Length: 171
Image 1 (cartoon, rainbow, N blue to C red):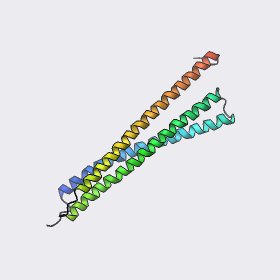
Image 2 (cartoon, one colour):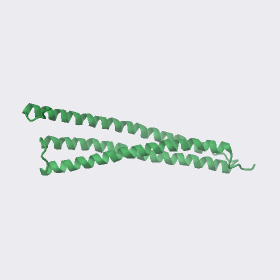
Image 3 (cartoon, one colour):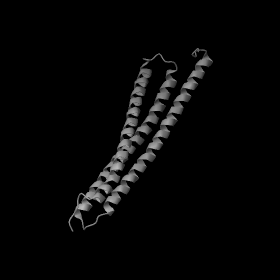
Image 4 (cartoon, rainbow, N blue to C red):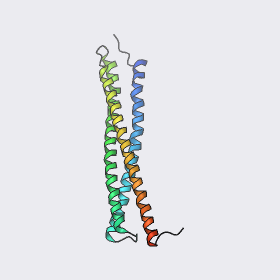
C-alpha cells in the first residue's frame, strides 16, 4: 500500500499537538516573566538588607526592617523553587508534544506498522506535565499573595508604631 505522506488525516492529527505547543509556549513565557519578577525582588531586598546591616540607610526601625527583609527572602526562595519546578515541567511537556507530532509522522511513514499508542502516550504525558506545572503555579501564586499580605501587615504595623510614638506621617 503506497504511503500518502501529505494526507489530510495526518496533518489534522498533527494540529492538536501544535495547539498544545502554543498554549504551553504561552505558559513558559508567562512563567519566565514571573521568575524575572522574583529575581528582581530578591535583588532589591538583598540591597536593602545590605544597607540596613551596614547602617547605610536612614530608615527607622532598622532591626524590624531587617527581620522583614529576611522573612520576605524566605518567601521568595519558596516561590522561585516552585517556578523553577513549573518551568522544568513545562519544558518537558513541550518536548512531549514535539514527540507526539514526530510519532504521528513516523506512524504515517511506517504505514502498515501502527504505533498509534506512541503518539497518544506522548500527548497524555505532555498534558499531565502541563497539569502538574499549572498546579505548581497556583501554589506559587498563593505564596505570592501570602507574601503580599505579610508586607501589607508589616507596613501597617510600622505606621501604627510611628503614630504611637508621635513620629508618624502627617496627612
